[in-house]
Image 1: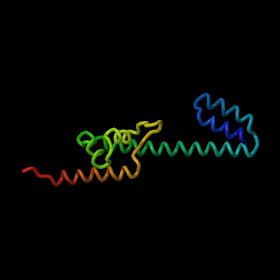
Image 2 (image 1 turned 30 degrees about the vertical axis):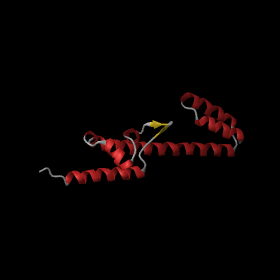
Image 3 (image 1 turned 120 degrees about the vertical axis):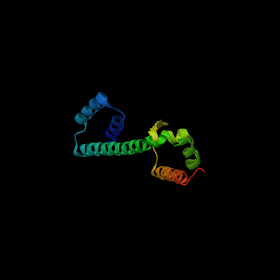
Image 4 (image 1 turned 45 degrees about the vertical axis):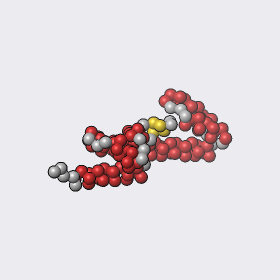
Length: 132
């Protein structure tokens, strides 16, 4: 089973033809019911990870699309500094899902609440403004 776990860890790092070749070789080597069950768990776990990543990407594309129109006239630097106490770069990275330190970064649920508060707060300030 040690070799199987090692091979599964190696398989996780591969893609395309390399993945296919490695998986085909493993199919010939690991034939016991226990090994096959472990491989099935590995595959199911991989599908769960992909599903989770796709769900996150879908949510973040939605956030970016929702902000597209207001980003033309709302100062994201102001929001980043005054509501998040972060830089505009930090906020932009999360809105666009940029890779930072090897991982894509997105707005957390807490960040989305802060952003919603910021937009509502700014809207309230604008709607109460009257120039005399």
